[in-house]
Amino acid sequence: MSDATHAMPKLHNAMWPGLVGKEEGSDHPPISLDRMLELTAAAEVNGQKFEGIDCFLFHPHTDPDASEDELKALADKVASHGLKIGSLVAPVWPGTVGASAMGSTEDTEKFKLAIEKACRIAKIFNDHGVREYGVIRIDSATGTETWFEDPAGSTAKIAATFQEAGKIAAGYGERLAAEGEICWAGMHSWRDVLNLLEAVDMPQTVGFQADLAHTYLYLMGYNAPEHALLKDGYSEEEFYAAYKTMTDALRPWTIDFHVAQNDGTVHGTGAHDKTGRHCPADDPNGKLDITKCSGYWLEGAKDRGIKHICWDGCMFPNEMLEQSGTWNTILDAMVKVRGAHGWA
Image (cartoon, rainbow, N blue to C red):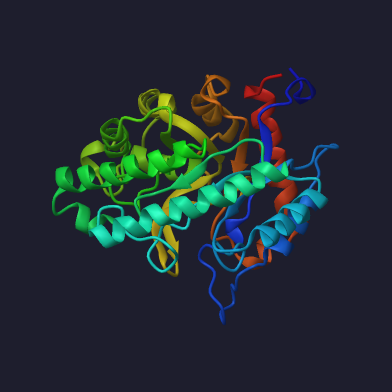
C-alpha cells in the first residue's frame, strides 16, 4: 500500500537534537530553533515533507516563562514553515525548572511546576491552532545511582510525583508520556518502567514514550542485567522473540513514539550521559530494521490516540545536522514507517 493512502500518523522532526549534548564554546554549540526549523522545512522526499515538529521547552529554544505574545509569535513562526507542533518536552530537570521526581518535597514541587508551565504553553499553542495533537514528555529527572539504593521506595516516590503531575495535565486536557531511557531512574529497564506505570495507574493520562534507539538497550539489559532479554551474538529469531516480549508489555502504555536507530552502544555528551546512541537512519552499524521494529510499537496506535510520530537523533555532530542529506534520509525512513504501518 502506498504512503499516499496513509495520511496518519503525521511526520514530525524533533528540535532538541540542536540542544541535547551541545555546549557553548565547544565544537558542537547549540543550534538555534530558527535553524532547526529551516533544516526541517527544507527536507523533501518524492514530494513528501515533514509535517510538524516536537519542541523542547527550555532555553535557548523556548523560554518556559515566555509571555503569551511571545509564544504566539513562536507559533506563527512554526506555522509559517507549513509545520504543526506536536509533543512538548517539559523542563523537568535540575538546572531548568524542575528537579528530581524522587527527591525532597521541594524537588517534587519544582517537578510539578515544570508540568504546569508546559501545560500552559501547550494551551497557548492549542488555542493558536498550531498544535492539534501530541503529549507532554517527562522523565524522572534523576539518574539511576540513588534509585538503586532503594528500588521499591524510589519507584513509589516517582509514581507519587507522576500521579500529581498527571492530575495537573488532566486539568488541561493533556497527557504525559514517560520517556523510556536507560539513564533515568525507575525507567532504565523495560520491566522497571512497566512497574512504574502500573504503580502510577493513570493509563488515560500517564503513558509511555517509546524510542527505537533507547528501547533497544532495554533488550540488552544495560543498567538492569536481570531484565535482559538478549545476549550478545543473538540470532534474528531470538531478537524478534525478545522484541515481541518487550513491546507486548509496553505497547498498551505507549502514547508517543520516536523513530530512531541505534548501533548497540551506550553514548553520552556533556550532562546527558550514558544513554543509547542515536545513529543516522542509514548507519551501516545500526542494529534495527527501522520499518519492521516500528510496527511492533505502532500496532493499535490509532486507538491509543497517537496522531504523529517523531524522529529523534540526539548528539549527532553539528556538521552532520547541517547537511540537507541527513534530513532527507531521515524523512525517507519516516515515510517508509508510515507507508508500512500508517492509516487513512
